Image (cartoon, rainbow, N blue to C red; front, side, top):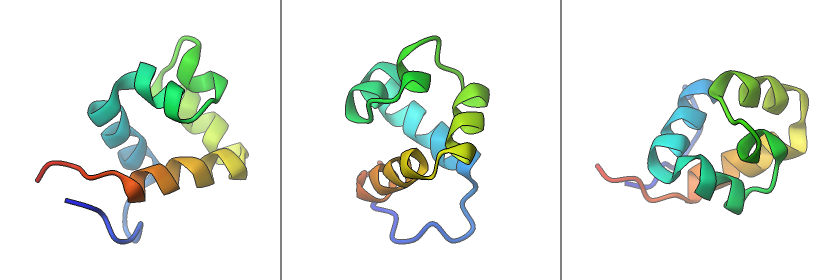
Length: 70
């Protein structure tokens, strides 16, 4: 199932779903940001993504491009 819009999806649920789908290692490979590669956690990643619009845009784009199982 491909998501068409981010309406109503929190950044935390979006990130959690990506981590469940890809894992931290693959997520860090797809989006080269330190919070995914060095001691990753949802909490630290959310803090970084909320302050860094270009990184958040990349995460949101990956989420929209990902085909999740139903």
